[in-house]
Length: 166
Image (cartoon, rainbow, N blue to C red; front, side):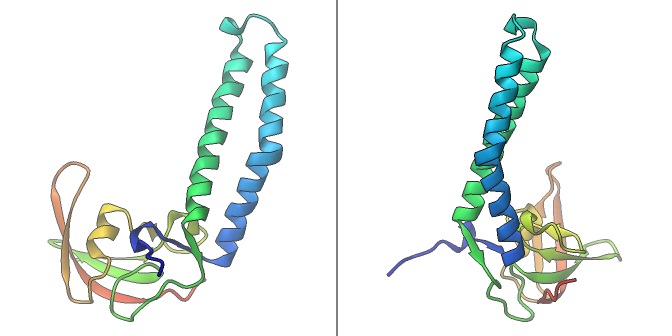
């Protein structure tokens, strides 16, 4: 029996998975070759201590390598398809509406991986403070989480329905 940790799983649509895989393939192949050529061309210009082109290329190389590691991690933990969803219970792939305590305004967003950024509504990660606080809760429940400034915020879950796309 294989045990999986649900909190490490990133649910992706086939489109998002294919887009991320293509980006990884490009960065780890042609992208690495292109940056190596830039570094070599800048190196040939002479003194590396005062060579802005060389330092910019090395910085770009570091960003590319960081993105490759990030993409590998996402794709390694990805599940393609629909996240298991129960109407009325918050979870990845659900359109969620919450009301912030002390505020009459309601906010609606998709609870999903940030890699699903093609969605036409705001996307909140299940790993964000708000996402983690409401994940698994039912409509009508309240949840509290800590804001970056250290204050506590409470929300009430108004609605949770499967995301229908576009």
